[in-house]
Length: 392
Image 1 (spheres, rainbow, N blue to C red):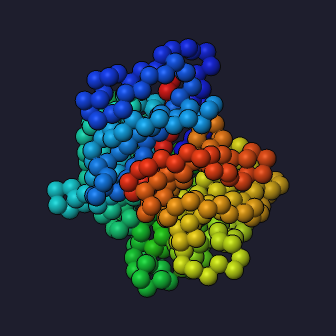
Image 2: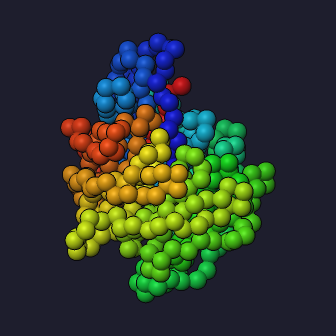
């Protein structure tokens, strides 16, 4: 999940400068006297026009976005995790073989002056097709989900941001209802509880959210009691998002396009299903797979993306029991919104349309939760991940 960082520098008035020398690296030079800017990094599937990771500067107060350009050439950086100190960015290389076998994870340092990324090192993900990452609160451990091989790996993070050797490897086993998509385990996301005591792993192949106790001193996992929570057979859990109060978890299920709301027990690390709703409008009969989910930073709305219907589904969170109520659907104005992100102020949603090659920026109505196109469309080849980094 992406925390709701406050990237507005209220007490510092300084010049933000992308030095002209950055043009030597294919980066657009930008000079601005406004201090309230964030960096935004975009991951892509490479090949064709895409070469790796692209960056923008974003000013929440105006909604202005300025392209920096390609900041790191790397293969298929399809998901990111940002270190808690905001100095390092980690990217999966989803289909890049490591020594001819596994996928890999690349570590970069962030230059906040010009947005460039400096490559630090690369390690094997210890599995095939790594697709999701998270960093624990201490900033000492990075956790990765390997989709195709259905496994979870944990790596130490060195002081300078480099990735160290793996401290833990957990292999899932089993299968699900769908004979095509669920022949084996498919770990699709790794999310730590707000206190970093538990790790929740959405396994699309098993129709389970696996629950582990996480040791932040040793960087190891142990099976929880209970060890998992189930979703409907054939649902295909993909990603999840914690409510800001830490008492509820919302899971988006890829294969049957549903959202499952869970009550979360912070002491036991357990999940109890509250309800499950469709992410699609009534009467829709086309093919669709659900993808990303985010709870709004103020905890009042949930957003989920539909690939096929090509929309963002909007839900309201109601009452103390956090029941979910459908609000509506908004077209992403493109094809295949694999990922989206909410900016640090909670006022904008950036929808990444993978197959039409653009990120469409929407304003969020804080009263109704609905989205309105801002008029800003960012052309990026095959965008599949968006993260914000505050400039402190």
